[in-house]
Structure formats: C-alpha cells, structure tokens
Image (tube, rainbow, N blue to C red; front, top):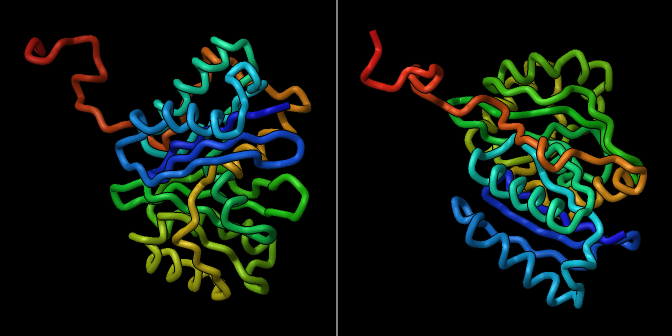
Length: 247
C-alpha cells in the first residue's frame, strides 16, 4: 500500500510517499504562511520524481494538530479532497506524536510546540524502537510551568529523573528557559534539548502505515483540525447578531 503523508501543522511543511518498505520520497520546506502555494506543487513533483501516478496512491495520512490555524486547514482540506476524489482512505495523525517520533528513536519524549500567547502545546510519549509510541499524557495547552505540573505524575511514574528526557520542538525557542526551570523544579535535570526538531511527513507516514494496514480510517468529510485552543474571536463573532446591531 502506497501512502501519501502530509504534515503542515508548523512552519516546516512536508510531504512523503511510503510503502511497506519505508519512505520512497519526500519533500520539505520551511514555508511559514506559504503552505497553500507550496503543497500541491510539492505533491505533484514528488510523485513525478518517484514515477508514481496519482492513482497509484492508495491512502492518505495527514497531521491534524495541534498547530497553526491556516496550515492545518490547508493540509487537512488537501488530504480530504484527495481521499474523496480518489476514493481512498484517509487517516489523521496527532502532530505531537509525529514530533515525538521525529525527535527520538527511543525514550521518554516531551514534544512542545509554541502555541503563542505565552503558552505551549505539549504531550508526553514513551517512544520505543520498532513499537508504536505510547501516549502517557495527552495534549495540554498552557503556560510552561502549568504544562510541567500536568506532566509531573507521569514523569515520576516513568522515573524520568533517572534517565534523559528528550525535550523537542519549536516551543523551546521561546520557552526553553521556563520549561527547563520547571523540569528542574520537578527533579528532572537530565534533558536532551532538540529545538530543531519538527513533525516530519516521513514520521507521520511511518505512524500511519501500520494503522491504515489494520483498517484504521477517518471520515474525510468529518476530519477536523486540532488547534490546541480556539482561534481568537471577538465577542460578537460568537453570536448570530451582526456587529453594530447589538442592543
């Protein structure tokens, strides 16, 4: 089964083509706010370079967030449209899980993405060689110290104070100091920092392939992004009352 994987949740966008043997081809670009103009051409070029026609793609995997509002909408809309047009299955993959796998081959991984407004989106995974990741704490969006407080019981249960913890993702760029300080306060000082790590399309495809092979599917029409928080809106946008007509 050939799987087209799409990951556009962050500023680093990627596409990959995989089968049971592994990654056949991939393309990646740092494209903040340029996902729309890049994505279709990247898929077309990658398939052309691989000698695979569009009807040779048998399933689609896509990162579903948390992540950027526009990037997620573009990636998911593209994946859903492809699945409907080609009548192939589509499967959403959690972007934090993809980031955890992208950052480490094995160990306890805390993937963190910058959620802005002083917050990060984070989760906690145990990643093993040749095994699917185990989610220890699902996605949390909060200030760095609140995130670590949420993770602390699971970190203690995994004896994270006695083994290196991989801390990975662009959340480190702005909030690395606060995260490390909170981890130290929790007794965790063996930290491998990976601010360069990003959720790759190759990793999303590797996660999706066995799940698709087992029959996992999402409804293309109902596949929705996970933003981590609701987009900022004005109060009047929450009601059916047009602006200027209140009262």
